[in-house]
Image (cartoon, rainbow over all chains, first blue to last red; front, side, top):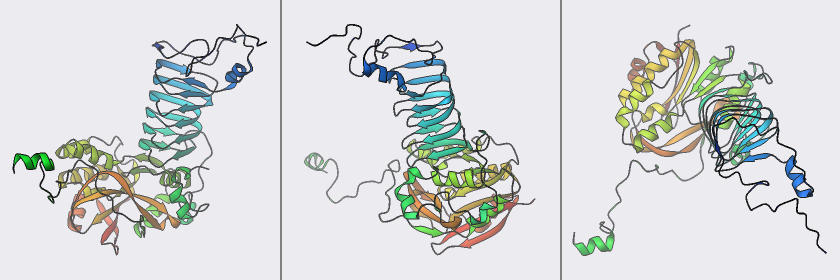
Length: 192
Length: 222
């Protein structure tokens, strides 16, 4: 009555299909982009192919990490990360000691090194960066830690508004939000 | 004190105040965080606004709205130094005497390359040697025509929590927000001490607020 698909092995909880990556520790270059095309009949696994790639908590990568798809890192990476056309998310458990280049970077974990984004850097609550940020837009949430420089011009994005704005310039968000609302939503301030 | 008292009260007599641990977080005053008008801020922003891609150092903890304001609106390149965290680190490690040396080696900017420095109230938390070293570094990195804004208390306080200042309302008001950390004693610097400490700069504006805080804007001659 129930047809069993032997081609697809059940995935252990928290693991990934095709074996758990939890014990991977490498000092070689890792490139998650050109993943092999497995033959999968299950609809659920087909969905996984389109989802973001996740580097798990216990994974340690030393070297250069490049790719052309969105990536979430919960493990440790040392070296260099390049996702020029994609979004990089550093999860709450992510520990990065690397130069980071991406389209957008969302940081919930710890980064030591310079972060360059062509669109936006989003430093979330409890996220931490020790290094320089270069991006046309930078959002920093309440509770985040940052030490370093922030350059919103060099990243090749939109130029900031004219200097004449200084005299009439309210704080970034005050024109669009009342002050009380800013206080209650500090994380959103600075985002456009 | 009898052994039975020790067992009963954990070594403390009832009613005996607990010794204040300087390494613990400073108690935060209750109530809403006040919004206080600033007279020096608009002058400071005015000094930056006629510069091309100004370079700004902020000694306070990072605040998203301030970053957006200075980075996006004014086109500044920002250096966030967060010296409150440095003071906190030394206080917890009981190495406050090393703070002056830490500050001296902290700034990597070349001489005369910075257009503005936001000191906020960090000088209140520094003992005289550390304050002098920091002031010397500021004078060194400041470009001719550059501006420095600082708040200075008029009354010494045994222990005060850190404050961070969020720019709101037409860049003329600041929300004084509590920042977690050990805080510390506040030292009073007389006006003559400030002038002497920042030798090479001159006091461009000085305001005494109702809160008894002095807002001082220092400039380097162009």
